Image: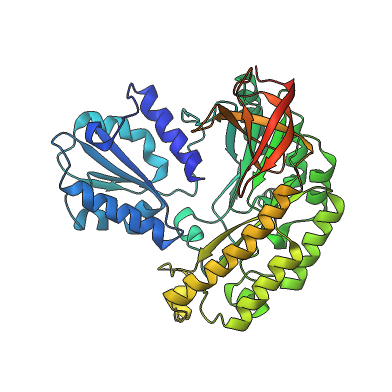
Length: 427
């Protein structure tokens, strides 16, 4: 979601005549689009602002937006003279005006986000043939550790007509893959009375001429219905990849987190996904060191990791977020050293599983959507339907091509392949 917001920020700035700067030292305006989900993300922002304070030049405008802007507000102004403006993400259209004014008095503008949207603003995508399309904003799950409902508000579904018009416009401009975004896409449409749900929306988006691939994230296990699983299995354009956050393999910790499911229920869902969608890639999120997590709880997480056999996982250390239920109710009683130890163990276990999953694809042929040139070597980088990164020799290829690729090698985190034929291309 932050990448999507940043694309709109860049679109707003470029439409106003600004060019992307090479470095902060060269910039007329410096924009921090911030995230508050983890402490490490916040620490990077505070550290960067501190470093910038001694190097800021006369005439430079520094803007802070995103979730930290809403969480901390004028505290950015109290901590020094580096920041000139704090804006809610819904006010990013004002940044060019502020930069041109060279404002002399710092200010903070945080209006209600619950009824606003930035989807009508111009956008500058990082990959021209792939687009991020929010289907809902905010979240109503209120997991104990999560600050998203506080900084993004309760879940609001976008109208299906607005989503489809956006996808039609994107397809006409050459976009071939759309990624439907939401903190919990599975509950899309719960606030409508017209009977539209996420399974039906998937089918409508996949029917848009020119759209060759549809992805989505993120799912919540409690709301992943059978009709959504059936839609993924039945619709060719929907990529066979499900990102389904587990967070913990301990029922005690899941209950403290307020996740709303047991590890047994999660494993049943995962089994149903694998049964109905052959060859599916199943990925997850896991938090280690949540308050009260014992060695036994942690070992249960390792057990679930092995039984489900995730193709990939994003692993995090718990960090208290001020304002969340966990920060009010629980003591952060797992030491930083122990959190790091558990994280390293999980990483080793998951890396082995990921490597095995990638090695199993050697010798197979996958349809790869070419996204851009790789940073090193004469390769293009693309993604297979299961979201695996694939490096392909660059001869004759270009961004937006859908290519049949024979996989010849597996690395720790990616595949390497040889292009056999082009099976589709963008406009």
